[in-house]
Length: 176
Image (cartoon, helix red, strand yellow):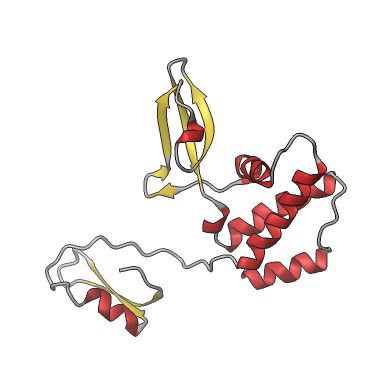
């Protein structure tokens, strides 16, 4: 079950060995738990909710990256700029054990491995990489940081960007 809700109660069990948590969730979550039995062992993860970034935020990032690509002879496309921005400013995938990494033979061409990867190190035979999220998966905090860095890059190239007031308005709409 993946839903949003609020923690409404926490009570220590009679024997003191556990805590009973109570959550209030949307009624639509009921369909997701109908098949569960009272004694089923569940994997439970409760994390603070973060609003996803808006489509406008992603669209603005792509406008800036397209303008950067058009202003420099070193890029052949906005996709190359996107990959560079992810390498420099992207957010990394994390799970309960930390950042998601991969170690492969040094000869592996990572452009053929699905996803975005940031080189970490190698030992001569093997190379290690961090997995980078694509911007469409960013929450509002990650997207705000990503766009701030792209705006800085655009300004360094003399590319016109939104005014500070416009950027602030967009960030407010993104929920940051």
